[in-house]
Length: 331
Image 1 (cartoon, helix red, strand yellow):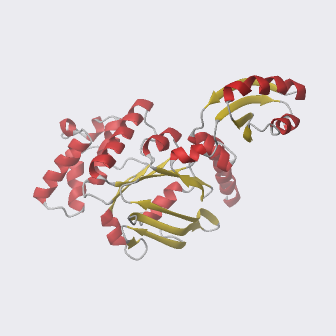
Image 2 (cartoon, rainbow, N blue to C red):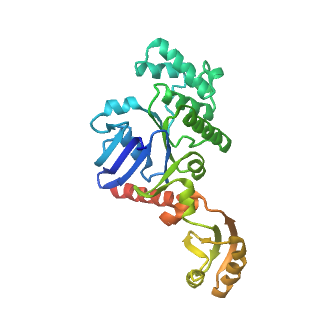
Image 3 (cartoon, one colour):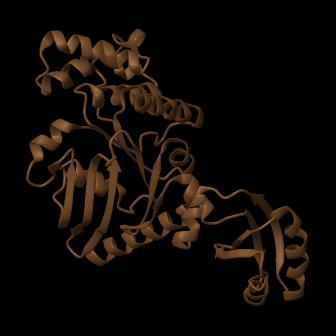
């Protein structure tokens, strides 16, 4: 059976003057899929979303959403999507119901149908009992759920969630994950999620594209991405010149990969528990001090490090540094 695609992207590029924010990326999203764009802030995730949702014009390449070209059929694309932005976009002096009423009127939904849909989405995100409460009295998690409800009011074919849990505490973030997964399962909405939270992508997404410097570094299911590393991951915090030590460690057949970064060394190995003592005992022979050791199964953080050479936090630091340099240069 031929796959049905909600989104098709081919060699999509977006430049801002001499800066390339999205660099010739290609991917497809199947209907009913939760697809994640995973990467640090500034990697090109939000720019990609903005192009697909017609808020930015692409520089080159091709993109289709629900069968419509995002450049030539903007109105059709906009009718086919819902968007939950990074920054809150609710009217705090209105109630939850009034926010949904206003938004549904903008989409031209008839009054009787509006009432039915508002009741439907409020129940979906479990805010029925808070519908007539002013939004300014909502918690952060309630506001996020209301924004998701608003994004669904016109029954879009594709829902964009741009960093949907940014700034929320861990417990509320987990609740939002459960709502998003339930939405996808219950009504089959295709969801495109941008995030820099590894656990979020791992928990929610059927497939994940790792974005680094505007390019897709890897794309697959979270499980298959983690299988690339194989075995276990031993993370060592080290000091001293590690050149000779790492060269020797690399000669062991059971070592799959070595990734030094920011005072740490991550080793992908077979039978990690049995190898820790051997590695730690080897270090002093090369005047390397091991100050901490951690053993774990591969995570998406390890996958990101494997494909980009840095952790997501280190990448964000690099991007922030480049942005500051650009600002000084322009000044």
